[in-house]
Image (cartoon, rainbow over all chains, first blue to last red; front, side, top):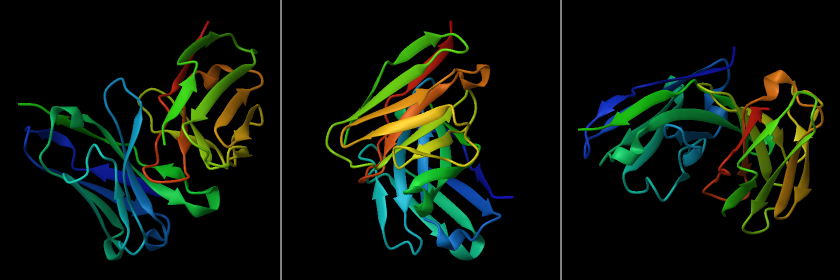
Length: 120
Length: 106
């Protein structure tokens, strides 16, 4: 079964750090580009980051640029999001998603999400 | 690239035909996807390439458009279709989403 499972969410302090993980299974992780998408409570979806298969190319939304770092470990079938300088507005459910080139780069496989709450 | 959706919400009855519009701030060809999201769940891909139905998605869903104007149509609304629908542009980074359209039961 193709699956993505996020972990690492929880309570973070403003100005603090958290590291999210996404464990992939059921497919050849190293062959797929990956993304992170978040959703603040009661709000819409926000694309926040992308990483290529070989990690040579990464992109970020302006809202997280310079504070968040996306990375991956293909040997461990894992995707990561290092979050620093946390802000209250980073409070959201964070989803990892697989980019499918066969679907014109849409995201067909999503994790269940992990909740990040930033509060003092 | 900014995306707008209209309406932001709508109330409809089962069996109704529903049309949701997504407009891009600049031309994106056919690089548009549509997702359905139900409360507490991850989004589900419905359509990509503006009009290509994802495998397993009922044929009552259809998409059209290119350039800057796109539509998602549900030909006969079913109880399981009450959800929020998002468009996403796949033409350039950042891969922006539209603000969503909530489809509610009338």
